[in-house]
Image 1 (tube, rainbow, N blue to C red):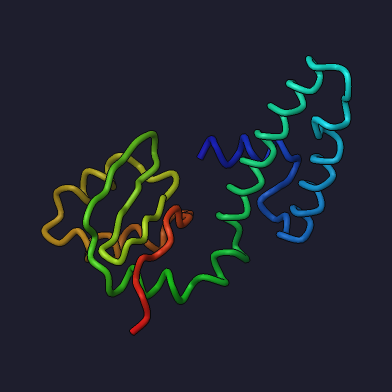
Image 2 (image 1 turned 90 degrees about the vertical axis):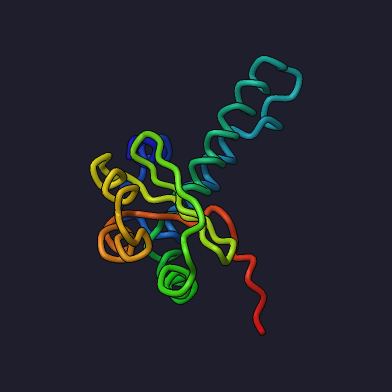
Length: 150
């Protein structure tokens, strides 16, 4: 996905960068371009504020798609994708967003349009997604599960 590549370039990291290293890089960038570093210069403060917002967005996004993050949430992800029904989905610019009955919403990246069309036309969208989407594409959780433990 273009967004992932753009964020990695912005922070100067690769796909292999671990979370600990990513956090250090993020902190270093924030120290460099924090608006408070430019007292008395409103133009530089505004520029630093915009740069800081971009860096924060990139960091949070990259953390959400990091293998370590996904590994730590695999039980929740597996429970949702195996036992919660799909209630809605949408597709835009190679990103497939699937909403589940338990309140979770996941984004899947770099999904080809033909896979989306097959999902739309599938007899069982849940079965199709389990076979062709859930374990085939990078993803991130964009909404926490609303399910309350019994």
